[in-house]
Image 1 (cartoon, rainbow, N blue to C red):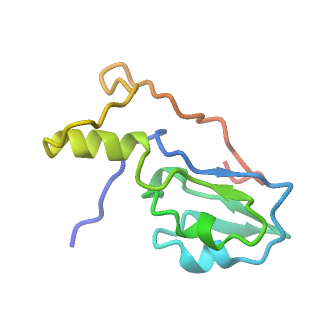
Image 2: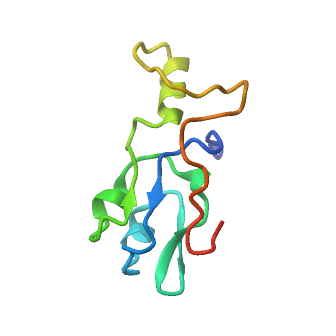
Length: 110
């Protein structure tokens, strides 16, 4: 099976480092190794690999991780390509811009 490539800089994933207690549950449930341990806290090592499934945010005991599961720009673009209606997104692929915050570089990983 080929490795899927997701759109760059569109994921809604965010990590509040101040809330992270370093339990590592997100490391266990993430199917794409988006997170890594960096000392006493987790950090985002590959934000673009996130498929916005929401497993990390649902399992985080301190609510340090947030993600809009299934409603991010990537989901809107994919649904639009599949011909599904009501999949509006403010992103412009041609212009290379998106509504998501791409400055979230946590724990010195980014």
